[in-house]
Amino acid sequence: MNEILLDARQVEKQFGGIRALASVDVQQAVGETLGMIGPNGSGKTTFVNVVSGHLSIDAGSISFAGAPISGRRPHAITRAGLTRTYQAVRVFSKLTVADNLRTTALAAGREEGVKDSHVRELIHWLELDRRLDAIAGMLTLFEQRRLELAMRLALRPKLVMLDEPVGGLSAVEITHMMKLLGELKTRYSLFVIEHTMRVIRELADRVVVLVSGQKIADGRPEEILRDERVVRNYLGSQGA
Ligand SMILES: Nc1ncnc2c1ncn2[C@@H]1O[C@H](COP(=O)(O)OP(=O)(O)OP(=O)(O)O)[C@@H](O)[C@H]1O
Ligand SMILES: [Mg+2]
Image (cartoon, rainbow, N blue to C red; front, side, top):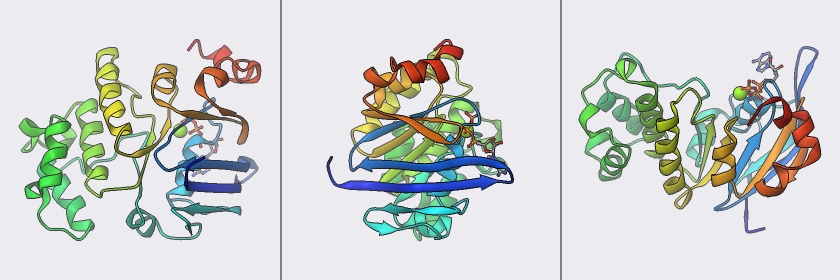
């Protein structure tokens, strides 16, 4: 494996009586696109929440880019270069697209917002040029997902964690988003949670499978997607 970017060891997270993450080990190399799959409620979003600092862990350790991050606040982890999107897209719905981007730039300590050349490139690449004055809450879900992505990428992260990036999109939009993610993959390390196996098959270099908070498989998509335990515990019931 190349240099390790994300190193989660023996991570535990309990919610009342539910063991949402049970001694989970996940390593991701620099430049790698890592997929995470598993049934509803298997702990995938919880994993992203603990890595990004939105939830604390009960035991174990998490390192990012060689430094421990468990216990650090989300904004400190973001500043260290780890960013994430949300399963239910998060943008400032009452602000315009331009103001959403300005807000992120400000949070990152830059004031230029949409005038920043990197932000302009993102706007163009994500085809948001003609929507800059639109109120974010009035955009389609696909446009909101692209805006959320632009806001995260404006921070020039080292790792982008995507929680169901094609969730709720139409078949045509999924194809479009996959093209964008394919381009993103050449420039960033990506971590992708998905139920749409086409995304995992075509984008992931490696995939880990969670079932009831436990990692049951870890390997190349072509092997994992026909692994008997994965089919029995997840894919068999999914029709994917
Ligand atoms: N903040 C929370 N408080 C209490 N329980 C939670 C919380 N977050 C998640 N859970 C529980 O932890 C378990 C794992 O949930 P999680 O959202 O991580 O699953 P998931 O794999 O992302 O599922 P999905 O594919 O449906 O998004 C579930 O039983 C869920 O109800
Ligand atoms: Mg989830």
